[in-house]
Image (cartoon, rainbow, N blue to C red; front, side, top):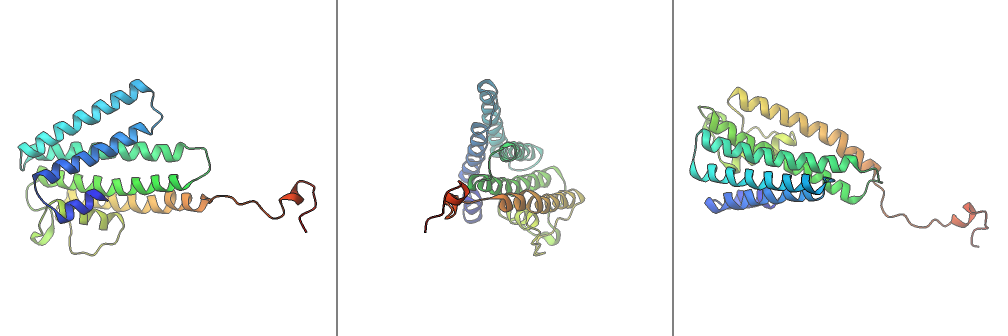
Length: 212
C-alpha cells in the first residue's frame, strides 16, 4: 500500500529505489516467516538481494528498451516469490484460521497487483508500439492503476491494453483475482473464528449444574 500511494503521488529516480527497497523488504519478510532451514533461508536472502541490485542497476542505467524490461522482469519475479511464500505459509498452517491468516491473504492479493503492474512495465519495454490503446500514457502510475482495476475486475475502461501480449496478461490477472477471492479469501473468512468466550452452560457440559 505504501508503494502504491508513493508511486501515485511522487515521481523521480529516488522513488524507483524506494519501491525496489519495499519489494525487497516484502520478499525478506516472506522468507523470514517461511519454514526454510537456515542455509536455505540465507540462500534465498542472497538471491533476493542480488536480484534487487541487478534490477535496480538495469532500470537506472537503461531508461527504456530490453535492459529496463529485464530489470522490471526481475522485480516481478521478486514479488512473485514473496507472494508464493506467503501463500504457502497461509495454506500450510494446520491451526485454526486467525486474523493473521486473513492479513496474510490480503498481503498476497496486494502483492499480486504490484507484480502484474511490474510485468506490464516489462512488456511495454520489450514490445514496440504503445502499451495502452488511444495513446494513453504508460508509466508506473498508470500500470498500477490498470493492474488493480484488472485484478479486482472493476474495469473502468479508461485504460485498455493495445497489444495481444498485454491483453493476455490482463486476462490472466483478472482470472487470478477472481479465483483468489472466490476460493482462498472466502474460505479464510468463513473459517475465521474470533476469540472464544466461555459459555454460560459450560458447567452443564461437565456434568455440573449450570449457575442459577
